[in-house]
Amino acid sequence: MKIAIASGKGGTGKTTLAVNLAASAPMPICLLDCDVEEPNAHLFIQTERIQRYPEGVFVPVIDTDRCTLCGKCETICRFSALVIIGKRLLAYPEMCHACLGCMRICPEEAISPGERILGDVVSATFGTHQLIWGEMRVGEAMSPPLIEAVQRMAPDDRSLLLDAPPGTSCPMIAAIRDCDFVVLVTEPTPFGLHDLSLAVETARHLKIPCGIVVNRAEKGNTQIQDYASREKIPLLLEIPFKRSYAESYSRGEKLIDTDPALKKAFTGLWEIILKRGQEIRRAS
Image 1 (cartoon, one colour):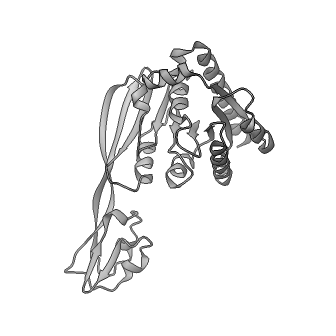
Image 2 (cartoon, rainbow, N blue to C red):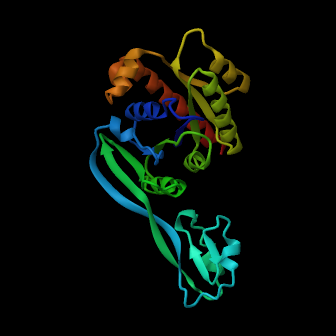
Image 3 (cartoon, one colour):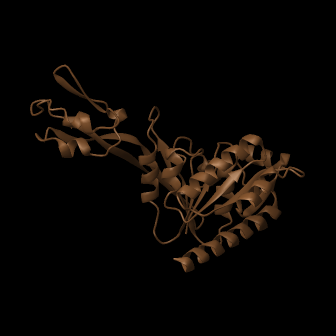
């Protein structure tokens, strides 16, 4: 299976859930930290055999001697990465989305492929599991290609657990669009409920089944439970709001090591997810 841990907003506890769920896995898995702008899963895991690979993306290189300033490349580029100013064609690599349209449409073959480094993809192991994360270059604005590179490095012989970027924009969609199931993490606040509804809408648009985990759950506060009931979305787990959990997190510790009861809860969550996977396979 390919399972994503996502949310409509940052700070809900996606990484907390992903790390503890990975550590509770009943079989070898690969955890992918796709929040390449701010990866932090590796801060909670003792990793070994760390390997780092630079990742680049296509950018156009202009041969000014062959370019006739016909303007076809400028017209086809939806992101204004190529602009004719006076008697010169200028390329703006930071605007390029690597569609290769300019290179293919140029009648003079004046455009050749160059490369712009987006950042690094890092691979490591912890126990029988594998952890892969991306580290985007400082100042870089386009994260989806690096997210896709993280996913390409994932092995084919084990289930994947993805820690998706926060929000519901392009980075989050790039992470979850090929997943079998999405676990949406939220908190029982008005902001949490609002952004959860956006994440649910996104998952439904992509036709990906989802379930909800409530982090920092409080007794008497049922707004998330009521929403899940109305929308007929399974409520998978509630993690209580405890000071000891926050202190454990601040020390870089896993919650399952702080509270043995949570170990059982995360094992039960795996059983629910794997059962859902069997239902998906039978349906397909």
